[in-house]
Length: 327
Image (cartoon, rainbow, N blue to C red):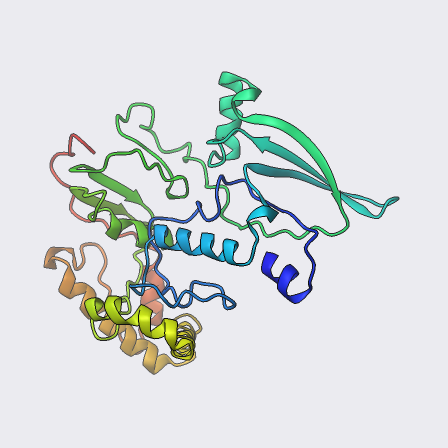
């Protein structure tokens, strides 16, 4: 939005309010979308050394974009917008802002309220302010506030380990040689779980609890191998930008075809083949005893009804005799 206002409209009298303490700090540890797609069209990220850069790589990319297009001085951090009010008589918006104490930007609304109750307002809020503007554009994401811990799940008060939401990642938590439990199978889980066994986390094990088993497709791989891609791709795409653009278009077409096939069910024959190959790959990666206990995912041409029924039942693997002590 900032780039559009400056480059396309020639307008620079604007300010961007952000609750976070830095540009891009809300990114997770990894991403399951190739960098050539998960980047701005006006400033594509073609020079990445891998198809799926880390959160730190994306963080650096966003900082570079903000600096390149001179947006740094247009961004006001640690600032939460709490109210928008239209003043009809003056034909302007009145925006209520709360300036946050540095370090509290990642707290949810509930956590901030709890801290205020325990330590007072000054532990979270610096000051309140009202500003006016003729135009206000909301760019707030839908996942800014994670859900609270379900009240009907007992045991949190006696659990000795750390409990936190992936959207509120705690860098100080030591995962090394720990048994980790991940609840859920959403996109964040797809990013987090593989990373738990890599540096700097090096977890001992990960148990993933799920209500509905997801379909897991293999990730795209770097053309000509990871090492060759890391060595040559950034140089080639830097000097021959049109190749990066072609690569972006090809990836876009591939992702759209997968979307139409898998989710929109435009081609049942292709979808069934993709399901069969995905299930075969899953079986090749996991122990045979986990191929099914209460539920068998058998795909047939007319198996849509069975698949829908299967989605209603949870998969329960045989529990261990004892729970790990350092979970």
